[in-house]
Length: 197
Image 1 (cartoon, one colour):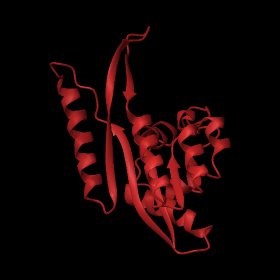
Image 2 (cartoon, helix red, strand yellow):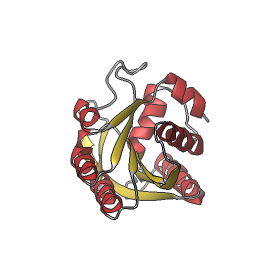
Image 3 (cartoon, rainbow, N blue to C red):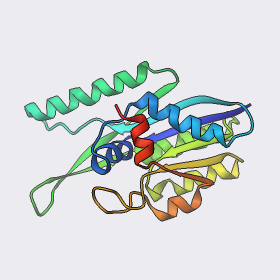
Image 4 (spheres, rainbow, N blue to C red):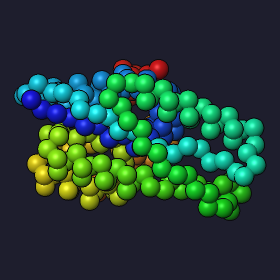
């Protein structure tokens, strides 16, 4: 039997939905769609071992504004919902404030997400728990983790946004990440329409 672990970069997942398609995605439908696509190209029966979702809670200042409190409560509610789903684990990083840009907008940086995901990649790959790994991400920082999993004979699938975003007209993923994965599948408008909330 083939076994699949799914790794979702929450920041990327949210950006695809909101920034590139201006919609909300139904997470269970999304995971089922990813699983169905991998299963269709896998000759053996495919079992989903676990889905890992990596994200940060929204930033809150020392004296949070009403908006910051609402954003924080909304994200916490979403994390709690995800953890009620079967075989879903939320892994949390930290959102660090790095001052303001020239336009006066705050700059935030995700911390620990890449490392958490990389460690989980390595653990799942080396223990022989999985034969397939699906990554929903666009950052080339994940390439070393992908190469590590491939050395352990794990087939790595990249689920990525479009080469040209329908809204921003920018590429939604790093070419280096696209090249280092074994299989690639574009999360296009048809995919999004199948998993919309």
